[in-house]
Amino acid sequence: MKKYLSVFVGLLVALGAVNANAASDWEVNVKSSGDFPGDVSYERYQTRTVTRSYGDEDVSYAGARNRNMNYDQYEKADYSQVARNVRRKYFLAHPFYQPAKGMFGSHTDLSYATNSYDFDIRFYDSASVPMGGNWEMSGFTIKEDFSYGITDTIAIMGMLQYDINEYKFEWDDNSPDDKFDDDGLNIFGIGGQWRFADNAEWIAEVAAYFQHQKDISNNFTIEVKGGYKVSRSTIYGLARGWYLDLDGDSYGNAVEGDDADGFYQLMYIPYQTDTDSATFFEVGMGVFSVLNEDWTLNVEAVFGNYDWHNQGSIKGAIGWQPNDWFALNLYAKAALFDSADGKEKDVWFMTDSPVYPEYNELTNVGTAKLDNYAETRVGLQLMFQF
Image 1 (cartoon, rainbow, N blue to C red):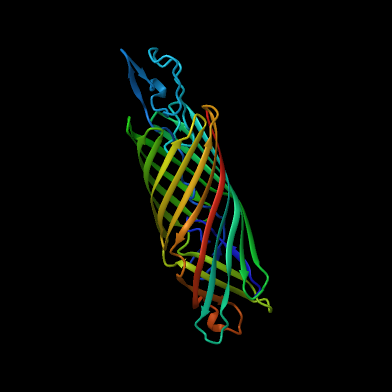
Image 2 (tube, rainbow, N blue to C red):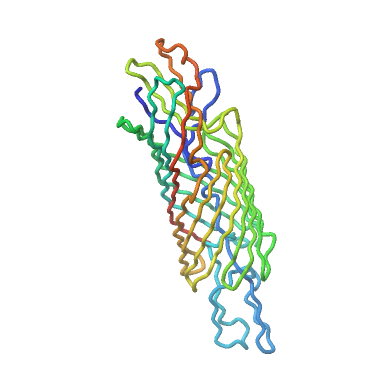
């Protein structure tokens, strides 16, 4: 079989996917990629609002528009003079960041990601030779989140994502690798954020987003975060939920092409079938800390249920912010474990060759066992507020 690859990677499953319509011709709809919502983590600000009393005067580190600004490094030459030399910032990399009233926020995310797993295909026909190999996705993503503060606690957001990805099957029998490139603007969306609590000890917000993933699905997301402020740190928990309205009624990996005689062949490994939707859930905890006037650290651990498998991941980020309007944030994320390892999925096959009339319609011919799942992402965020 002359194999070539057509894959969709995304749906946060990070195991490669193709949307297939269960039409009479079983055409495989191929498109795009993404790490949705890999990065549906729209970073926000501030840890603590502080008021201290020195002598007979109250010194407030929160005032007017800046009352929700981050408590970080502050210097005061004379504590009897009210906040004359206070040093404070919005930390643009903070997990609760959103722009203040009338201000704009821009987060540009440049990242490189790899996802891979091994597979071992066992056919029901005992005369068939088992097939093994490795699937891998690698590529660059450019993502832009642009937000505007309607009030100090309510913001709206727009988002775009451009992907430059390569998908590859490597076969254990030394057959040539099958590769497929997919570049393009694959995701756009809108959303809103509401920071409904913010006091000296607690901060909390809720957010909702709509995203369209080209030729794949419409995605609806709800996110809730709550944090407790301790000195220069915020310890927070999070919960996210996604509902995906799929264009087709299954998703998975497909290899298709022509045999030596020119007849069409398709091999399809669906992760889910007979469904036009999927739901994902995540819960996690994190810590955001101000190290000094210009540097911050963020560590976050997440457990997620992604429709047919579970995953635990960890993310770390270090940020540099020399002023109030610009910041750089370097981050890395990796899966620690994934329940996809050891799972078996059906393998379907179809050909229009007259030699195999029993396969002229899509037929379940075996199972594929997945193993050694791996996922990593490294990225740099450029953040502006103006």
